[in-house]
Amino acid sequence: MKKTAIIGGGASGLFCAIMLLQGNSANNVTIFEKMNRVGKKILATGNGRCNITNENADKIERFYGETPLFPKEILSEFTPKNLIDYLLKNGLLLRKENDKYYPFSEQAGTVLDFLRLKCESLGARILVDKKIENIKKSNNKFIIEGQEFENVVIACGGKSSPHLGSDGSGYELLKGFNHAITPLLPAITQIKTENQFTKQLKGIKADANVSIFVNQKLIREDFGQVLFADYGISGPPAFQLSAIAAKNYDKNCFLSLDFMPDFSTEQVKEQIYTAINNPITSPLKVENLLTLLLNKRLGQVIVKSCDININQNVYELSDKKITQIAERIKNFRLKVTGVNGFNNAQITYGGAKCNEFDSKTLESKFQKNLYSCGEILDVNGDCGGFNLQWAFASAFAVAKAINGENND
Image: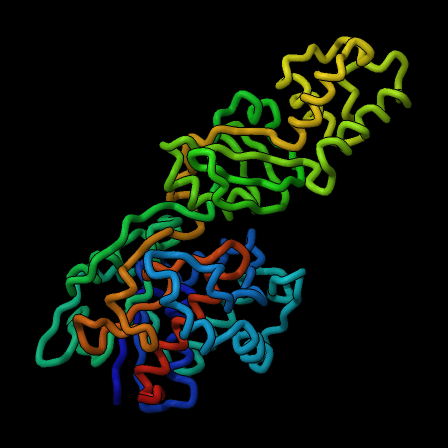
């Protein structure tokens, strides 16, 4: 009987166990989990709804790292469709929202229960409150907690959300086998900015196209709902751009928010003049100038950012000031000062160097029968189901390799 130890009971660890055991009675699998229960981080994904995957999560351009093409073969081998088909076939009903998939129950606990109960039904041994700090090798066997294993899978995540289990300890295990770790940064997290204006907008939500610039160069942009906070911004666009912010905040890095991306600056200006020519109050005060276009408080902050007294009459505004307001709606700049740390981050940007693992099997090039999967590797996907797809796809690849199902 082939004995495999999986270090970490998160999404990739649990799914790897399932794939190892399903239809293969010759396997014996033990999961070592440092927390008092498995899958705690799963419960926090998708705001508690668990965004399982994304229909675009096999597109290599949506993944990042020092070796960006590394996950291509694994993502193409086990695609979002493969995952969805497997889950549906095994009784986990899903619902689709745009390009994202969630459990039909809209509860992350449903996904965790599915994985945990499936593991248990297949005979996986799950040991909790077991933080593994070293792995020894003797007579071609791995020694963990006094037990011998033919294979070891490191699936204990990165450094993000350490209160949910991923505290970076897995990196130390890999270092013990001479693996190198890239610089680590918090990602899919909130962005800190100069807060002169965001403080005034705390709690306000607004759709915007958010662009991030470094040394005046546009790096990336994303559209979605922005949530203003006293430290800066949150919401999907902030999450998507946070890794770039984390790497470059100490440079000339700023965000540009466009609150009316479907309109040109000239069209926005025309809308402002329409409001002036058809006032909702008489006389129309500047504080109400943008009321019919934007959230009222956001409109007032935009006007104030142009050094305009919001209590004055709109007819006192020059054409130059109207143009300035329109331009500010299209380009509301916030200087980036940092990101919220690993405690708030959903993933870790960086990880174990991928070129030290086989790109098909994820077996270590330094130690035979040692594998890694999931977030511990330097594979980082976009927000919206991409990182869970990597967790499942990489777990599938490892299980397939251990089961000897890869073709040479």
